[in-house]
Length: 68
Image (cartoon, rainbow, N blue to C red; front, side):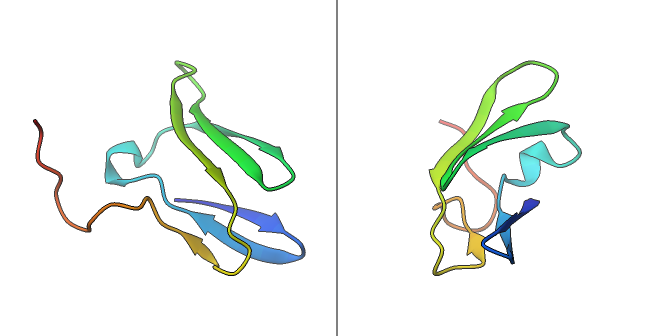
């Protein structure tokens, strides 16, 4: 999870446990946000900030994810 300040309020963006400890860069243009891996340049997350929520979830069910 990363935290940014938008409109004088803290907003939290979920990235998933698999990215814990990963150095990231957040590219922010108004409410459009891209989070990339700082070492590889891989896009980890792209979203439009929902200003009605403090936490921006990944949109997947909680718990371990099954690999297909």
